[in-house]
Length: 127
View 1 (cartoon, helix red, strand yellow):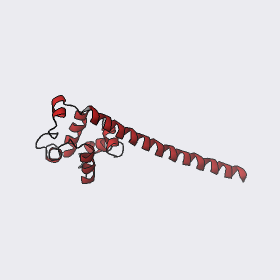
View 2 (view 1 turned 60 degrees about the vertical axis):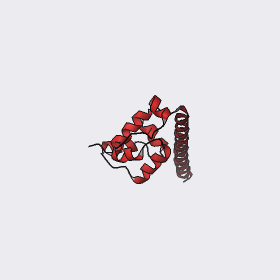
View 3 (view 1 turned 180 degrees about the horizontal axis):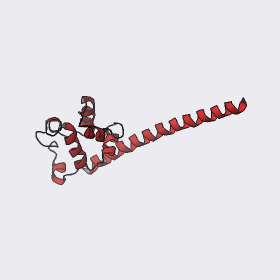
View 4 (view 1 turned 135 degrees about the horizontal axis):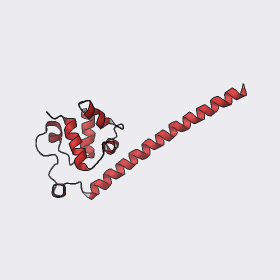
């Protein structure tokens, strides 16, 4: 029996995204989707809400129950089998912003660590 996480992985593949790109696009931690899949875990309603707001073309009924079609009827998506170019660009911008946000956070943390180490060394050499 397929679970929501299995259908989500199917959608991610259909959208042409990696699990990492998808995680970033919904603001989840890196590796979230793959962990859920590996552990055969349930996806929380808060995450599902974020997924649906980020990917409005995704059919919520299909995601949760497996009934119906994966995508809501959209002639462009149904015709090409891919996300429209405008949607792809929108997702790329979201992903780029999330990556930039995470890099900035990591750089700030690194700067704080280096500053603390310098202060620690200065304190020791001053003793």
